Each structure stands twice: as structure tokens, then as C-alpha cells.
Length: 59
Image 1 (cartoon, rainbow, N blue to C red):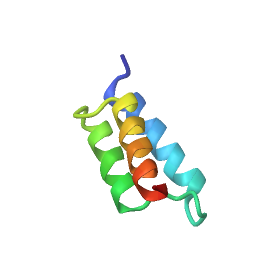
Image 2 (image 1 turned 90 degrees about the vertical axis):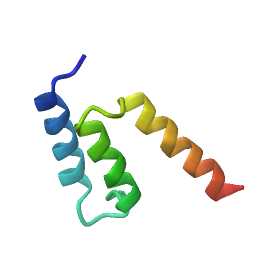
Image 3 (image 1 turned 180 degrees about the horizontal axis):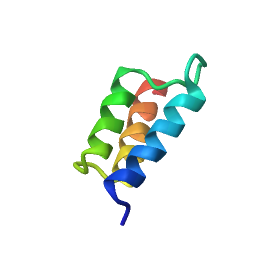
């Protein structure tokens, strides 16, 4: 299991790498990342929610 510091580093790196690009997280995605950071969601749960959202958008 990842520590809070590990999660924080991962999220910070991902957000910085995508900043200013089309891949930058929107408000919903940032909210999911915050919930991942505080431990209320796992990375698998974040990905699941993103997949469901994408299915809804494309249907």
C-alpha cells in the first residue's frame, strides 16, 4: 500500500506534467485526485469512476 507521501508525489508529478495541456485534469478529475490523496479512494476506484464517466460521455 502506498503512503500518503507516495500518493502526494504521484499526483503532484501527474498534475505538473499535464499542466496547460489538453490532458490537464478538470475539476471533477481534480476532485477524484484529492479523494485519492486523502485515502478515501484507491487508484483503482479513481480509474473506475473515470471509465464510467467516459462511457456516459460517449453514449
